[in-house]
Length: 223
Image (spheres, rainbow, N blue to C red):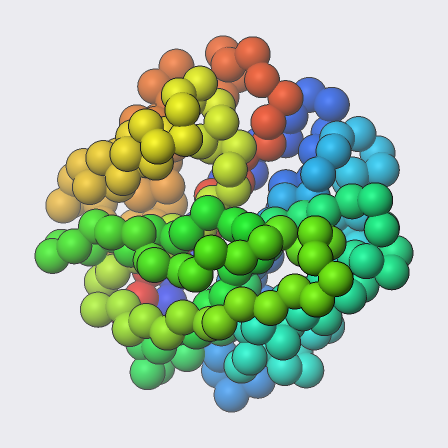
């Protein structure tokens, strides 16, 4: 979607067996923007179907109560428990007000986003929380941040980290180093940022890696 004050770019590669990773960006009332990434456990047609239901439902919940990301994910968790009781999922939802350069986000067992800018490259400190479908009652606090003009917020799924073949702590460090190395000349282009990060983390490319993992990256650059 086109929303004033923010530029978007995404890359999505599905594993050979079909997986449950997904992303979304949707315009919301009052010139707001919703950003979401998530991953459903499993692979194949059943995982793809479950992913489709969660993605579509999140869109509806975001329109109704997007300014409260915790409520959006709580609704999604209830839906998952009722419709897919044997399945779990991670998700992150961000409610963005580009005109105010304000983001409120919440995550459920999902890796923290990155802020990439001239003066900082850092992970957003989201609270630890369980994936959806793992607890009888899911809840987690939201986090508020204010991106500077020209900064990019990068959301992604764990498949990017798993495809490195490194332990998770090293994979996170590798991703941070890739984001920090984005050349100054391409920092105004979220598509170029995503491609740089992807090719730096996985220099041999996605097709050369023997892995069933999906990979999703979603970047939002704030003007």
